[in-house]
Image: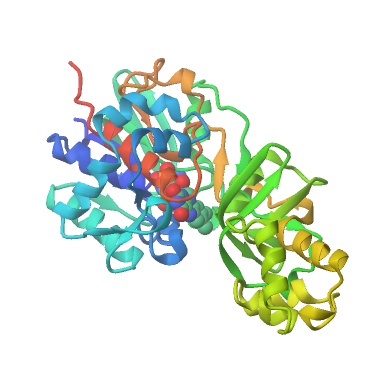
Length: 392
Ligand SMILES: Cc1cc2nc3c(=O)[nH]c(=O)nc-3n(C[C@H](O)[C@H](O)[C@H](O)COP(=O)(O)OP(=O)(O)OC[C@H]3O[C@@H](n4cnc5c(N)ncnc54)[C@H](O)[C@@H]3O)c2cc1C
């Protein structure tokens, strides 16, 4: 006697959505999560507000998923970001849009999203077991044996949604890669992606400041987005996106005011020359940034020589910052690499070699930018993997 039609391993966004889809299609479903609560990593996204999706077009989604986004064409044709938005709206958890298409619950609380997903599982008759760590998965004949420390559950289908390997304290420790390897499936090399950057920048002076829409560039790579100065260097979407192209030893250029030209800045310095340099810059930038930029220059605008004006504008428009390294995999936001997509059917997310074994979310070799793209990929792949009807 088999216990369940489908067992889902891992209660992050992909696992919760896989469980919902599985129940929706009438399958007897069990979700196993080792933490006390579901969605621990999800809870910390968007600064604790849960950046649940992005409202862009299909092209925007593919652009936001630089790590094998094109593998998701078929998935998105079955369930996409607009289905995510409709899902939360229909289930009493409306979303709102912010900059760059990022979407959050109107409550600004991650818990609303996690509660909405877990209530839906219960409403559809799915079973959830938290504080239950899966220690091994085997297949005997047509039956999967999913072993936890206390019990062995059996099922006809297993969906692996254990996530990547970043922030292991949230539960994502790479166990799904071990399951794949056990079944002799290839796992590509795991690397950090969306990594905060370590710099030799005098960050103490700017620590904690967050700037909207600055441009960070390295060679031909230019990213205009928000930037956060931290105690170790740079974070925020601009730094995280640029992290793909650097490893340490490179010098980035930071443009604090990308929408204002050099000529316009020189004209402003001339026009406001009676004011203190710091106060002129305060018209355009936060006070601490203005103070940092104005340091090393004469106090008053009218005291600046032409050469000094040009040097100041250069400091504003192309400040060099030496990158000394990147955060490790554990402290990066996303894992690049995972279960090799060549092993997975893109329409169903079933293993090509092991019938009944499915993968969804970050455990696969898919990585995206922050901004809701990873979570969109997790929720949509979760839905597709969970919705596959049992064969035979
Ligand atoms: C600080 C931070 C901020 C982020 N911000 C954003 C953002 O703004 N936008 C965005 O799109 N993405 C963001 N991400 C990435 C995003 O959170 C992940 O890509 C997403 O959560 C992946 O979902 P998942 O369901 O595949 O895996 P996870 O969310 O990692 O969930 C996997 C679950 O599996 C469980 N599990 C693992 N092993 C076992 C086992 N053996 N037995 C039982 N359960 C197990 C884990 O406990 C965990 O709950 C952020 C990540 C971090 C760390």
